[in-house]
Amino acid sequence: MSYVYELSMSEVKIPRKKTPKRVTSTMKKEVIQACDYLQYTLPFSCEDCTHFSASNETCTLGLPTEHHLKRNQEKSYFLSGKMALCRFQEID
Image 1: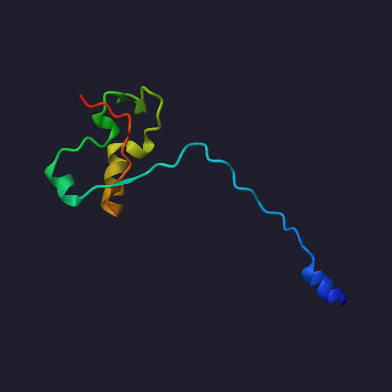
Image 2: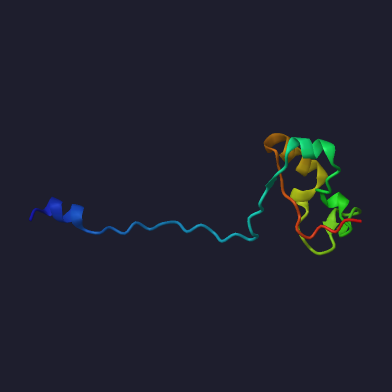
C-alpha cells in the first residue's frame, strides 16, 4: 500500500464546535387567517392579559413578554401572517 492511500483511508477526527444549549424553548408561531384577524377581536398580546403589569411591561408569572407585546405581534403578523400566542393568557 502506498503512503497516500493510507492517509486517504485513515480516519481523521475534525474537532467540531459545539453549539451552546438554548436558554429558553423555541417559540412556535401560529398562522392566523387574515379574515379572522379582521373579523374577530382576538386577544393575542400581553396587553390583553390579566397577568400583564403595564407599569414595567412584565408578566406576573415571570414569562418573557418581548415577543408577545402588541407592537411586536402586529409587526410579526404583517410580515409573516403568524403570531406567537401565549398558552397562559388569562382573558378578563
